[in-house]
Image 1: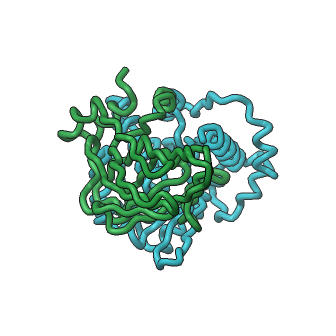
Image 2 (image 1 turned 45 degrees about the vertical axis):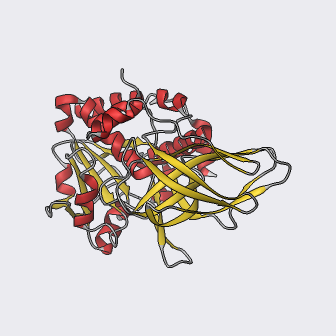
Length: 218
Length: 163
């Protein structure tokens, strides 16, 4: 189980990194998002509402670095686990925990209303802001961030959501600074967050994944 | 450095914390040639529409069996699901035709794989508590199993240390 997960994680990281490197022609593979004025293809305008009813736009990503995670409350494992990790990281950052924005964006706005996000997020660090919106608004932010999500209808009338599981690191200028994969150990993540808060480019401490690039390209 | 589970519990807070410092191990359950061990469930955040259950099923017999369903008085509805990751995308699907437990083999319902979906928890699953679940097997019949609510798998101590 573990190796499979780690491979998926590595491929994810590599895929996302190559997507953000505009000097790399590979990023055309992920070029569905609208062109933006920034130097990166990840990110763009959005307008959502947090669990307290406050409007959040891309302008709220400027001034402080941010973590953004896309999920849904019906998700029984990846999403609550990721939110627990984010809560722990914020706590471990101590006073620096206040120097980073954290956003949990639902990709299931039908079930995840503002009220539902308020209830759900009460179990986690109160600094995490849960964002929802109309299906069109969610589609807009997902497109801007190249988030894969898909509603899958089940025979019993219920539905589940497929979705990307990585956390986006965004620098204080609102630019994508790198991914954190699901299940990434704390001792890998904390240096990245400290880099981000110190306005340094997060330095990934991973082996050269050149072979994985080929695999993810295949 | 506190163990992973305990550190996370402190985040959740609440009276359950002390209980969980020494998490109870689920008692093994038996049905025919099957032994079900290490059953556990995660705590549910507020308003969570679904909980999750994992367990290890060992078939000591000479013919395969099949986990075909589950039920719980603590959930409105229960389904068997599988989870997979492809290129960083999580997919969760109901299992078609049940989960085969081959003769002489062990099958794990575990994170990022097979699991019991406990849809519509009737009350929050709290660390230190248990969720009663009845697992239904094609040949071995039904067996009641207490799923311990905890932060991580009882047999994944190594994974915890990596965090």
